[in-house]
Each structure stands twice: as structure tokens, then as C-alpha cells.
Length: 252
Image 1 (cartoon, rainbow, N blue to C red):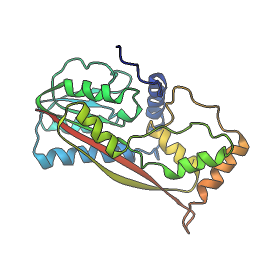
Image 2: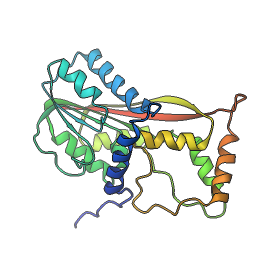
Image 3: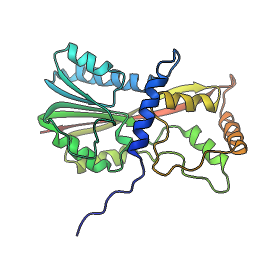
């Protein structure tokens, strides 16, 4: 019996468009990029801790170029791709790689089990994968604001996100060895809902839903803003959390 195709929750076309807009927005002096910066720093720290010096490396999703630059300075041969040039839901060409790093990408694929399996298959024997993306503990205040905007019939405006337990099960299913899933939380403060949305768009993290609902009308936007600011501290700032899941595994 043929296996069913995964539901098409995300649009690759919209992901590519969001990435292109983010690159344009990064020309602004105050453009946000703290999520990807944190992920890159974390990857470099992990590699230094385990003293891994990979020869062939595939980096997916780091549009800053920082990770590839650092790895090349250490002698690695690095290939860079993003959603526009590589589809993680299909077999990866030019393998095998000693290290594959995927950043801010796997939470936006329709077939996550299949994508993880393709990444594992693209590793050399003894190779390692590190993948980081936003987890289920992210953006609680934004989610609450979206629900408040449409209290009677809330539309699906937020991405479904993966939690630690599900990620661990998926790593086992993809046959990774010595797999570990851990998480950490970044916290940023915002004076308005619009600023949070702007930060997400700066970093290519806007909506990539395949069937997005219509834009919020003016009354709904006002309800969303009011609900968001209900969580403000005594300085008028809302603390929003970004849970970063990091999946590591080896092909032994």
C-alpha cells in the first residue's frame, strides 16, 4: 500500500519570497538578526567543544554567511544553500558530507521525517548533523494576540511547531545515532506588536503557510495589539520568548 503524501501546510514559494524580502530588509541599520546569530554562535561552540574539524560541510539556511566564513577559516570545504537552492524534502546532491548544518529551516518543511532521513543519507560514515529551528515554546504572546483578534472564529495564522519529545522521536525514526535534542530560550522585549512582526520579517520568519487566511481587518488588529500589550511589564515592554530546538545526530 502506497504511503500517503504529507499534508501541504507550508509553501516553498512563500518561504523563498520571505527570504528574498528578508535580505532586502537586512539593509536597514536596525534590522533584526538575533535568532540566526544565536544559532550560528551555538553551532561554533558545539564544534569547538567536541573538537570536530570536518572536511566537507553543507550549510543550509545561514543567509548571513557567518558560519561558512568561520568554517572556511578553519580549513573546511563549505557548500552553502538556502530554501531557494535546496529542497530538504528531496535527496541531497553532491553528498557525502562530514557535517551538515541546517538553520531556521526544518520547522517549515511539510515532510519533516523525510527531510531528516535525506539529511542523514547525505552524511558520510561518522558524519554529524546539527539542525536548529524554532520550537513549540516560541511566541506565546503572539499566539495569544492572534486568538484575541478573532475570538469567535480564529483562523490558523501561526505555524505549527515541533516540541522536544516529537523531535527526539523523529531523530530515532530517521536512524540517527547518538541523537540529542536540547532547547534554550531567547527572550526579546517589544513595545508593540508591529515591532515583533517586523523583527520576524527581518529574519525571514514571517508566515509561510500554504493557505494563509485573509489579512486582519482594522478592528481585529486593534484587538490583537491590545491583547499583546496586556502582557507588558511596568516599562511597557512585552517579553516574548523564542525557544530554539537543536537536533544533533551522527551517522555511524
